[in-house]
Length: 186
Image (tube, rainbow, N blue to C red; front, side, top):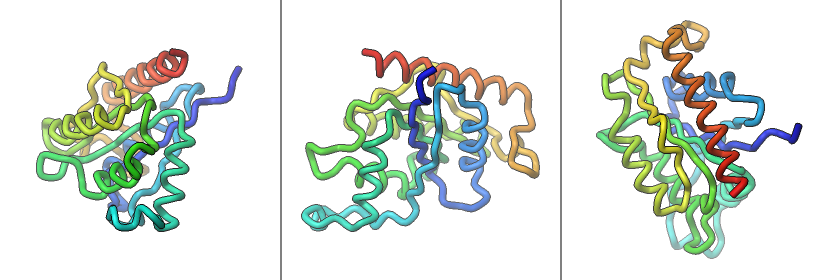
């Protein structure tokens, strides 16, 4: 068997007890053997400023290198004010510059959003997909993944405590694994 595909996971919440961080850990556990998911920290990235492109901060360089090395990307995000959190947007901007040298280009990807609300971060999910099109990330289209009522779906250890949710997440990860293979074989 070949080595697993390197998937960079970006979590759009910085909170230690984040539901989306719990979800990212659950997805790591549910990932098929063909994928190796690694959460890439984004909280310490300096805000994107084009004036710094000539001599980028070390954190930008390291982040761009890590995303560039990844074979695929997975975004796990909450919804803030019907859009993506600023920290995630900043990471996207940092990785996309300098213009013409985007670390995101050509990678298969997927978006999953989670929220305590009923619509599970639908607005953030779709705003993020709009950015991914411009970045030349090829996002998985089906199944769409919005996890509503997320505050009720994890036990005290942070594991998914709902069988239907676990089955859905497994189906999502299986579809993502197939999508990654299909895109990288093309």
